[in-house]
Length: 305
Image (cartoon, rainbow, N blue to C red; front, top):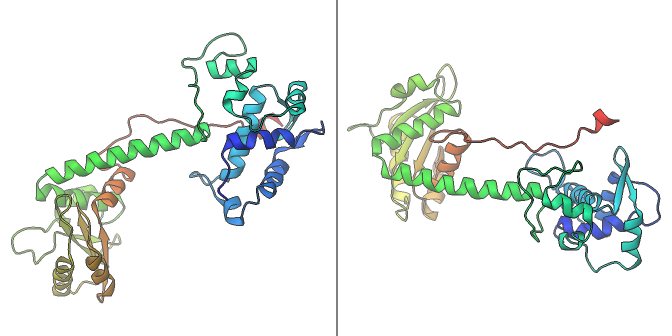
């Protein structure tokens, strides 16, 4: 089965405290992983940060929401226990504990409304939503949507530029990624012109220039895919330069036959389509810049030990 969402986990987390003694969150994670019969792969699935498993993260969020509602209370580092209110819930438990269910408890309602323990209000209250995603997963999903929209806009900008601008953009990206020296060397890397034998750029793969990558950049409109013929022509150009490696970049896509041709030819030719190009530009901040940085922080348990 898929890793359960954090709302599905709230009632099981509460039930692990039913005997009244304190429980350790790590033990709860293991017990519930067994209860939900998660596979080894599902148990090992990591968050994008790589610092915590997805399942453990969702169990922690379930416990956090139960704590805000006053159904469990923290006792010491990584331990918690059921409260009187939690016992009352388990006397006649709902089929599923959800955010909507928790809204009946004043502590959780204050949390949702953005009211602090001192009676003040935070800048913005949390929206009342029935989402299966944890708050940090909502942020990551929103980030993916923002990045997808940005990638689309970047790709459109590149497509509407001149061929020379596209060639320079590709070389700038490669230099930013660590190939070919510094940005000051862009003009040296650009060779695209009449009589260039089908090569638009030459990038040093190492600082000394002992190995080189030859680049072909094709600015095609969306829907005009690069075919096998263009790959064979590029292969012929690489042979003229006695090259062993080539990079073919396009603003469109590659046909299946083009990909198969690149795999069969007797040298390493890497294909980068428009979508991958846009995401590489975002990752290496070429044609875009950081507008705002949001940090997700968590309690430092060592500090409070």
